[in-house]
Length: 256
Image (cartoon, rainbow, N blue to C red):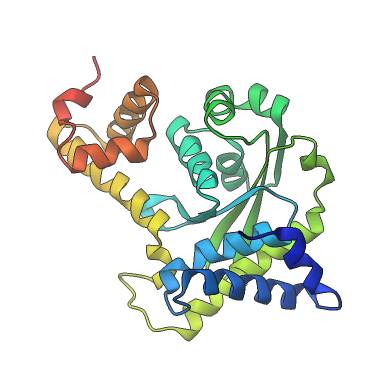
């Protein structure tokens, strides 16, 4: 089991960039396949959790017509936090991405600013605070780094300069992968096909199929998926999966 304090104790005398490289290498060693670049975003978030006093981290990117796409998160519950934001269509990451401004939120802020998201986040995860930092990379695109905290007071104690520096190292790693690996223009770099991104891509496929079946435009079809997810206490990603696998029919998702 990884112990952040033990890992940080080995960093004395290392630059921040060297610390980050060591954290990413440790994450890759855990996977056992350092060449699997579709796992790079998740490794980067594990490195971020190791380097920063956060309990969870996630990274997302603005990618073409699909808008904000999650690339990776660590631990798994941080991925759930992202899906809850997408399901409720509100939250700190969504705001930071839209406004390109950092967002800091403790528990009371979450409840006041995004009540639907906060209700589910507080009920379904241990997180009680969040920070969302917009990042810009010439090659990786417009990214957002999300940090989650079980102690809401930890939000105010976060060293923002360190967090931004780690975020820049993450986007630089994505950009380097664009430069130094082979990929096709239609498909994009391998990290754009991470497990989290593939899961969200299935949502857009479901939106298309539902729209055709019920004669809805994309926004109305997505709203239908969100409505069903809200009514059943699930995520849009899970509802989309059930639609694509035949567990749910378009008729069952039709809004009254």
